[in-house]
Image (cartoon, rainbow, N blue to C red; front, side, top):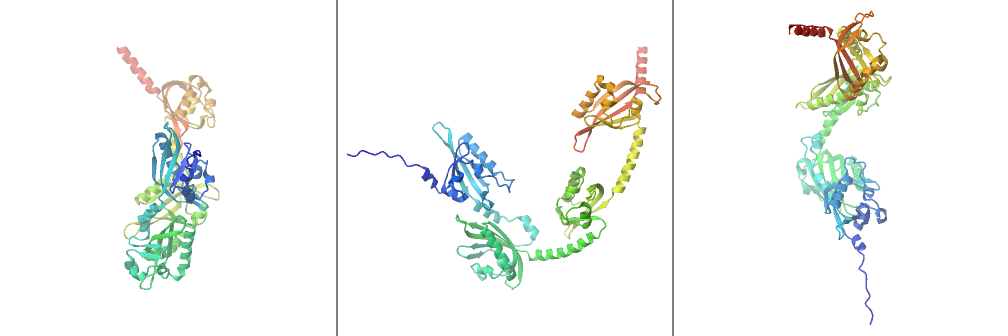
Length: 533
């Protein structure tokens, strides 16, 4: 009697690989240990290329779409599943897949399912993936961008269409009769009904564009061409389509919409002619000049701008680069506020000339041009060179300020940098400390005798902590008439930080005012009060 032969159970590996879903198996360290054949076909990779690889090495973020952290979203979901030992899902996540031609835009529903052992320890992580790209992109197609439509025309109407590529069947939506003058049955039901109505001069280019999009497996396609209406005339149209592909990558269906942009096209032609005349007028101006869109984007600079700044002819982006760094933030803020409010823009700032790299002061004025309905249609602006006037005004201001400081009872000393280098003193400082050749010397060089009383520690505190320090009624001796004869005096000192344009401390201003008469008067009053008591 033959013995019974024991057989081992079949391995589950081929069964798992044959599953029709898009599945991955990962270790708790997120290393790939298994994948279904369906998933490998979807991502166009071989099993040996992904096995043993960290999952995010195979599925990295799309570098061309840096604002989308797909890795981060999936990673957090996986970690949630590992920590809490229960499934965690992410819905409709954009996660682009690398291909030989670059990254392909894709959307997924993904669920991380922990696989635990008898001790409730996670052994594996099962990743269940569902491709929802078609659903998302079709929904996107049906949600027409209102801003884009407004730019074309507030009055345009779209005609929806659908082309069944496999069965060569064309379907048309509402608006066909109103816009093109056809009834659906007059158009015909196959693709040739569309071919025959595309203008002969446009047909070849449109077909080339469509075939190129299909060859590259592009989902979206856009084209502008002329389409024949029922009355025999041609309309300029904007045609937008979205194509879906089967698992083999073959196109199966396209849905789209057509918008009549004839009126907008004619308006654009007229505007181009008007712009040419307008730009000619700006070119003959003796000043630098510009135009900008209603939203503030610079559209045009005249030749004077390019000659002065050295920017490449025709370049309008990057103009802020020739503005003085100390002025750029102010300029952008004021320009943004003017565009937002629709008010006149006027500001003085410095612009770099390319010949010697120096900056000159300009007065920029920008005016909003409005259409019949009161909406801004264009901004126009000019620059006026005010450098000479600016310097004259500044010099006269400096002279007046200098005279005021010389006559002021407050004595000032400006110290800059961590070594406290003297860069400015008023004449009164000479009465306090004599002529010590202040300018360009450090505080330690000027006042070595103050080392023992903590003077330099005080300066350090003001400089590093950005704090103002007061010392009142400090008794000292001063040379009132600069003749060597000293007298007693009482001084109030103020040490305050000086800030640069970035709000960092760059120095210290020491101010001193003599209060001898006030102190003596108070002392006399106190003495009289004591005598009477």
